[in-house]
Amino acid sequence: MIATGIAVQCADPALRTALEAWLDGLRLAAPPGLVLDVAVTEDDLGSPPEAVFEQPDVRFGSGPDGRGVRLAWDYAPAVADVPATVSVATVRLSPDAARHLERCTRTFLTAVVIVLLRRVGWYHLHAATAIDPSGQGWLVAGNAHVGKSTTAALLAASGWQVGTDDAAFLERDHDRIVAHTCHAPIALRDGGRRLLARAGGVVLPNRGKVGFWPEDLGGVWTPLVSPDVVIFPTVGKTRTTAEPMARKVALTELVRWSAWVMLEPDLAQDHLDVLTRLTGQARCFRVTLGRDLFARPNRLIELVT
Amino acid sequence: MSDRYVRHPDLRLADVEGDGVVLHLGSRRYFSVSESGLALLQALEAPRTLPELVDVLLERYEVTPEQAEASVRQFLETCRTADLLVPEAGG
Image (cartoon, rainbow over all chains, first blue to last red; front, side):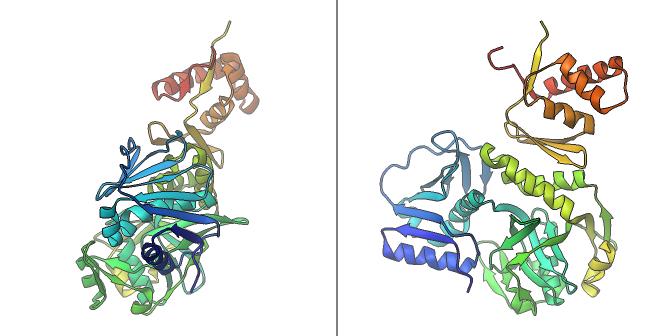
């Protein structure tokens, strides 16, 4: 198992064990030195931050000193402070938040980890990751409903290595940008399962989807991809097509799907520089996904060659 | 005495083969700029006068001073409209 680089500090041994198990399950090979310092308290957690950024259930604002990030959970009282230059996230959970730990980890604490990882130069991008049979690294970037998960599942079932269907963390690695991923199931909606003709999987009741591990689909999970190709898909009704993108256009798309770049002035330039380097390293394409891909998944390789 | 211009501190710039992409963290907008626009925004990290900005274009492009000044004036107007400039600190 790949050890996570995120340590948990918590006075409650049961909560600490649960959080360590969650982080271990992510199998995220983050650099050491990051800390989640978690306490359960009945104290007033203060007013939530003025939101400059929002996700379902989670609000993001500036930290108490005007730098860094304060996160607040909407589902139950919980806040986290992640200072600009410190690799420790201070998390305070109400007893009610601690009672909903599965949801808390899936939404709130996942967001805290995304912000914490920025302290070590890991920048989140909404993208699936894969390695094709010839060894080329791929990113499939975009929001929900553009076909990322179905494509990731299709590629896994076709012998590609797949890392994630949704969340990649970009990092500089010498002269390359690489993408790290968590070990998480590929989450398919009913439509995707029908197209793939797949039964089974693990029901993800809170997401209305069914999860498949890459291994369940006949693929291999890979925690690390060095991208050679980035595609920005949409679902179409005709044959699959790919149109090369100018670097500047590709960069604006990457900014769109890595919106955290706007969150923290202290890190924005470094984050933007990573995205810019990625556009110089990888060939970028706007892809329309057609149903023909299900008969010949490797057509994707032909289209970008 | 000439006015001096400086770019908004919330701007972040990316140089993509000469062309530029600009983030405005305050408004959370982003957009692309031309090669000359990127050069001017890079110069505007420090306060600049109109003649200094004209010189930026004259050093890079084969244009007349009149053409360069017209381009800079138009660029500054666009920047003001898009909230890309701020008053010079202490000015």
